[in-house]
Length: 191
Figure 1 (cartoon, rainbow, N blue to C red):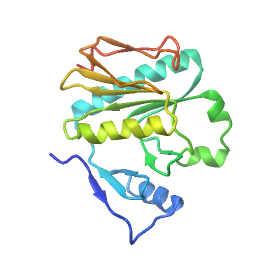
Figure 2: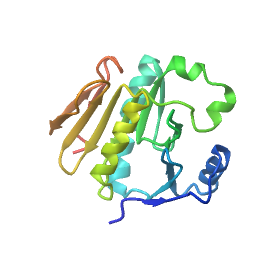
Figure 3: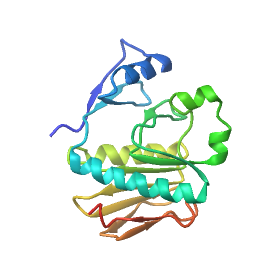
Figure 4: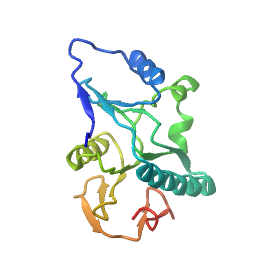
């Protein structure tokens, strides 16, 4: 199985605008760009992973719609991290204040910030090492809470600012802690 393809772009340095346009012109593919400017092409997920990701995104969206504390994003939402990488977590959230501080133009493109909360859902084609590196990158760029959900192993790795990674075996729920007050992710359909 193919995890993703990384293309070294030393000879072809795309501007942020060119990279954004590449993504817009190829909507059937998922692109990310690491902090070195290398483009990462990720294969689409299978139906099972897509369904699980939809459930995760729905639960986050429903909580946020009720609380009105911020803005949620699905796996198509792109972020320009402070280190220069362009990433698209499977689900993410930012506080309303961050959204309101963005210009209308900034909202139309990859958001120039790192989400406060991210979820990465491991699909059968994902490398655990690659996902762990992404989670560490999110933390280094400002994420306060992140969950790496591994359905096959029924494990969740919880990433928090300034703390060691916590590994949970077969949890039934996850708490949004103080980052997402009163948010509880039900993992019943994910396992």
